[in-house]
Image (cartoon, rainbow, N blue to C red):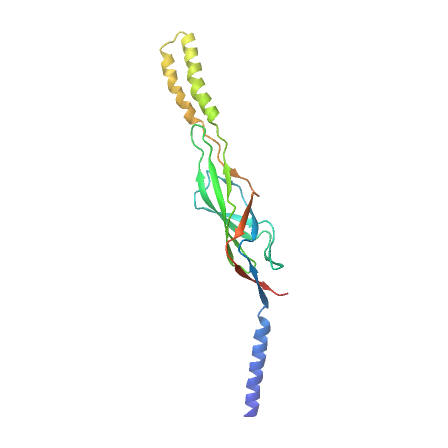
Length: 195
């Protein structure tokens, strides 16, 4: 009987020592609310290709450090959300868009919510061109028609004033690599593996 209990005790001793050494050692560090994070776009964003509420992939631009430990490395996955979007419209009105930081992935694979720094872009207005087309096209056409002796065509040329509506403004765009500053939304404990 003593030999059996010794064998059982020895097996349990080996098992617990093996499982204890197999688990990685880690420590927790506190990533504080309000920590500044810099993100960058991984692809260009245009107002005619997105909708309000869309999630846009981003990347961490600079290592995020808490208590002297890196908690998110450069290139770590992050996301922003499209807050508002307006497509370019007729009569030269430019588009607009606004994105805001949403979350980022930490070194221990958890996601932390981000807030702060929205980024906006406005497309170029082409209203001057639209007005020029709307006014000059019928005026020039009416002049040519009346100088050619075709006075009936002059009133018809006024309908060309509607061509100003065909002039569209430029879409808003944020190019690849656009930086967005964000703030960590709440205190978060991050597990860091000990070397």
